[in-house]
Length: 268
Image (cartoon, rainbow, N blue to C red; front, side, top):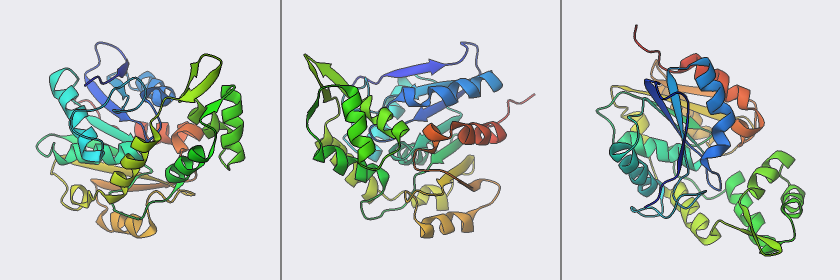
């Protein structure tokens, strides 16, 4: 497989934060936050991963789904990547991060789940609605701006619409989606049916779990939020913040502040 990654930070960094975007995204979506983190904490390098089937990454070797993608990224980390101190994932990537933690129980690890959930649930929410919207739009657009306008007219903020339109590529005199929306449909169904509660309820001794729940998002149900809070101790945290499902894009400072307040310190 071909897994595209970008490193942000000095070659001398001793700690490593792996960032996983959500469905329809790519690693560069996290550049603003990564640059702020390494500026404040230069002992960290951030690794921005394009999940399989996204950005410049090809298809994975372990199947299209949460655990398949987790295995693909694990392969890359163990064969040619860094040893992660911190895993962070947004939305689909948040569940992938939990699945990776499931297989790294003997390793110390901090995990950030940004507006995602360990639960199974019926298909729905902003990412699902985006899929329905783009499938209702034309297959080609005369310009990237016209696609942005169409997505914004569908009820999304201008910023989210601009972000989504970065998945368009030029072909001759028009633009087409680089994403395979049949695959995206399969991935979302897998996301909604993958149960990763055991990673939280049977937390590995060296794991520190942080959940960020955006106030206007339905990605994590009320019941799941209450369950996480009932487990909360010094190693399980639920952070509630004002924002939408794309809180990292629309309010990056919220995520930056949380990371800088809680990232593991380097001994000595």
